[in-house]
Amino acid sequence: MSQLKKTGFAVVALTLVLGLVGCSSDTEELKLTAQQETEISERLAPEGEVVLEKDVASAPAAMASSGPRSGEDIYNKSCTACHSSGAGGAPKTGVAADWESRVAQGIDTLYANAINGVRGMPAKGLCMDCSDDEIKSVVDYILEQN
Image 1: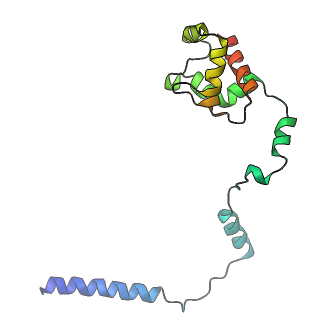
Image 2: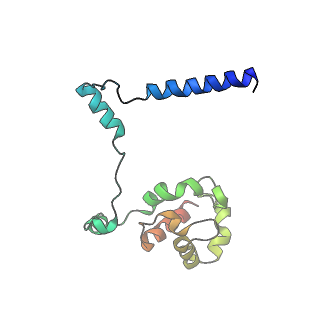
Image 3: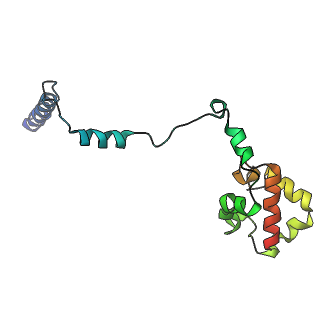
């Protein structure tokens, strides 16, 4: 073996030995202040928790008690991203020409497409906690804007 290879091997071996020595369990215990422990606990705490619907008996009652949301509220929460910009080919709110061919199909078809999804639009515009009547109110709201 050449001298260069022997030297390289020795350097790698020495690095590994020193690295293992540095990882030994005979190191001094790390002492933290109460403030440091609190800060570490806060940084490691989960951001939230997952709760399944089956584990929360009152979730449907809470949703029902709040009453139906307005078409405008739902539009602002779930629809405006696509329908204000035309993303994915969505007809723009306030641009009557974008809606003419859709309106010509009839209001029941518009409602059905909004509820079930059509082309690039997912069912209910991904507002999965919206009732069919709430989705219809969104359609009505959008048409009023044109």
